[in-house]
Image (cartoon, rainbow, N blue to C red; front, side, top):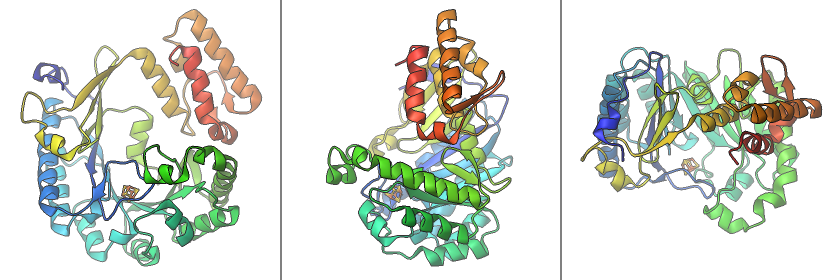
Length: 399
Ligand code: SF4
């Protein structure tokens, strides 16, 4: 845990920062979920976590010199499983901490917990953006995923949002779901587009070790479905782009001006403060390094944070070379890409030359477009992004 002395190094950035608050509850746990979330069965515990999160946020902002906050993201979990009163308490508490300069305020929701009452409460509290996790419209696939809200028809919730929500919103889908067919993937995207969301996120299914889904499918699960998953994901991506959504990040598609500002902050490695079980914070220092803090995943341990010496969780200093790779990894996820000079400028001559050769090879093979000032991945490069980044880590000397 960081000491009080270390905390005082942080004066806050001259630019704005983002704030993330994690709500670790859902109606029930989905089989594929590796996030810190558990079924909501203890309202008193939820109330304790909400007030502790707000108190910690206030304290952390103060320790950072009360920087300007321009994006807030309340995720989880499913924040909308909180009662309307508790959700109001959380959002009102965050608003009191972050001040009036917030340009984008996002709350995650599931179709089974979006009610007109909740929508009204979110709008009254200043929320400007919803991120609604539909994942698939096919009951068969939701069942295969062990998705907790599979028995709910998302139509009512999505119609309420499409007709009654005046802010931005994103509809989130998963593609590459085990034996999902190309027809099913196309149908999911077309139905999503039919509700007119300004933003759609299309995530590849990750079969996370230790989840009930991974245990059910066994060891060779991911490789067994890999080819089919690549095909369905590419098909779904193509349909979205033909429907007028710009792919501005490997999993994110937006109508004009509907891009997520908060997520944009992660991809450009802006400073942010996270609060809540498992939340991370990242704060840059004057010497060019970054310190990350991670709140404990365990709720009881989270509630003890701030009772002793400091109010941050486990700390880790990230050195400059690791930051080069991280910036490249995050930047290459976006259509804006990165500056090749940013990748090579802090490397020694040998590694810088090897890195430039690697980027030229990517360009020659059609994985990337390389100019003097920009490196961006192509659609084919995004399909093999993990492999490319492993190659990059190896030449930078971080593998
Ligand atoms: S709704 Fe989302 S956060 Fe909650 S258990 Fe399912 S996947 Fe996890």
